[in-house]
Image 1 (cartoon, rainbow, N blue to C red):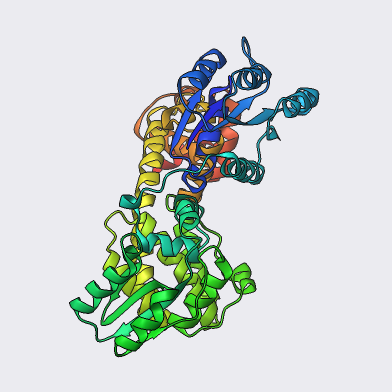
Image 2: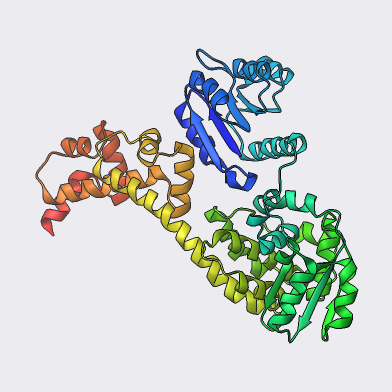
Length: 449
């Protein structure tokens, strides 16, 4: 799906662009503009699924864009950004078909709720899409049924719709041969053969109810489960955990166990996984958590191995603590790779600060350097370094000043100017707080040493 973010404030656009992991909501393309005239053209020329727009802009307002969408019968769903003083405009927007409005400054939770509402509306009103079986990944589909990852759920819901008429049974067999695997794939037919996996010495499958009994009687060492429908999420989970992992699970078990992540692109998600497992004590809850972790790894790891993942799911989940040691290493690797990209941004900002200490160095200026909204940059910087941007700037300025006091004969007033302090007395006050003496005393002490 394609999202368009429109606001005449550049930093508002950048802030919104980086506020959420949009792929979690099925958004694979994000368009942004600060020109509302351009936004109107983009609505006409491209298929925009969701529009997030400021309500008051020069030339073409958010209300004008809503009217344009209505007049041209465009399928775009609209979320409005407004200030407290613009409530009447927001009401007008709702009357024109906007799904929601968000008050500035925008809260992340409110955006998440508005996006969930928009996605549900799109799913409800969109025409049924043809199912592309050549892109069907049976393992990812299974994880979409078992876990809470929104990306997978949205990607595979069309397949569930197609398979809703099937009653399936879980199938497992020890000591299989290649001939057994080929026979089962032929028996279930094209499409459902994607739901046949090998995991170590076990053959695993979901097979139609009408052939399950026959397979059980003709294939030695095979077992089948009770029948279920893939459209019944709770029953699918109940059968999976009971039949393959010998755990009795119910809907309530997932409410308290599903971890606070559903993204494959968020550095914080990897951190949350690592922090959470050690706080879980019941085996059943550990297994549920690890299924969600496997889903995260499967999406995040571009070099994923389907055979290895099937082994995790159908064999190694039997010993969750042992599997966790493997997944911990994999999640940590993903986390480190993502952290490297964040570190690159922070390094760039730190280098800029150190090379421009005489500048005012506002968050707005640093945001332009990093191509990020200032608020988002501030959060990343603190998350990565443990230090506020302002504290870092102050510390580097005073470090530079102390160096100049030692290595040069420049006047204190000139040094203050060189490190970004326009008021000499303010510089002296800060220096004394940091070093316990005034710049003059500091220089004398260094000379005597």
